Image (tube, rainbow, N blue to C red; front, side):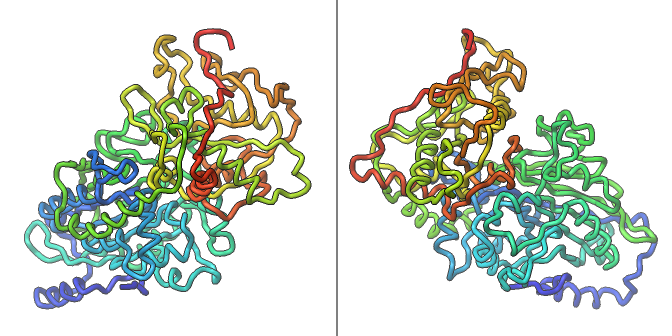
Length: 597
């Protein structure tokens, strides 16, 4: 079902409208009646990343992960408690798990399995996240074409080059009219506007898919414009679905990627559902230093706000107590919580619906793609060279030699390869990607590299390389215990932001101040000169500024490949045929915490 108007004319609305006519012939004009209140419950998921069943397709076992089938139990209970409710998905839904990969590849001519699940749960609206764009606009349009709910994003404008199907699907915001019962049991009309935004950085992260097809504007300004439009259309309640986070670091308070605190300061915002950073709010300790955030009350600048973490681990819930005034309904009180999924309780109806896609995904990831003579692991990736990271780095070098045509002006420059781990261990009890020597399946390759980034080539000088490595060295604390290697790891730095660069030799001394930690930096046995030029292979997310590493920006990109890194890793492994991948770990960098570097 497609929504070609801003106001949704659903079957439910038609039926309720008939009820309203029967109940009252009164005017819709607001009447001051402060003892009449409405409780509106706003539920939301965000950053589900294709994790629906709770099954770990990477390890091919059920190991207690949450999924949408578990969150669905919370949603049903919350709705039963409060019939005046709204259910929103806040993006990063259709990418990030083998289940999602299978759905994209095999649902081209059938309803998308993930979207069908949201239809079954009667979602009211979905906002776009940045990862929705990873597969391109045609795939995005195909996935959401079967949605029984509108798709929104107020800071995205599609050009005439974009697929027509997506142009008819995507709206900046929607008005959801509801007939609800107030505290006296009387029927009231409530117009709920939901406004969506997504980080403008998608034009960097997926530039090769979006340039000439999409124009993205600032999230705060787009929200402000949409609020004015919603108020002009007589919205009673305005909810912002913000696929953006809340900066916890003072140097990022003016970030254009994490702007929830700025949106909360706009007039007429009644509630915010947010995500993108995979944090839980209220509660997340990572927001402890944000003055604007009240982690007990669940507010940002006094506005009720919730974020439900990652992979359906939680469901955000905001209850607005609305009071009737001459000017309309206003928020008189509220409560905010993040409901935690229980992996012991799943929605059996939804689980049964997903079984065909689940079984197909199992077969999909079990396909053998090659052989490795060596174990491929991220076990040491946070404090020493690892076989998993180096497999990725070597695959990138192989692809450059086999399938990239480097411009003649750059062919004599040294070629390096940069990568970071995804599922690495940051303490002795944390799990990590670990693939035993022997046959390697498609699912295991996906476990090594979980995102459909493409491979790009950037040009930097020696000083810029040093700056990059110094920024990466923020992954360590300065005061660890020499006898406990884990104590040196800064868990506030995500695994995927700890880059190492193959082709360079160096050591990291975390005891030194930030910016002075990289020691003995050399290339082929010679110290690197600050003006020396290098080419570096790196994923498209990092090359375009993802992770905020210095000097990595579009201006320094020399060449972009059309292929995605999971495919590149698979082709690389296949190139060894029956012999298998043979390489041992190269100790080209080290962490020195006991002796002088």
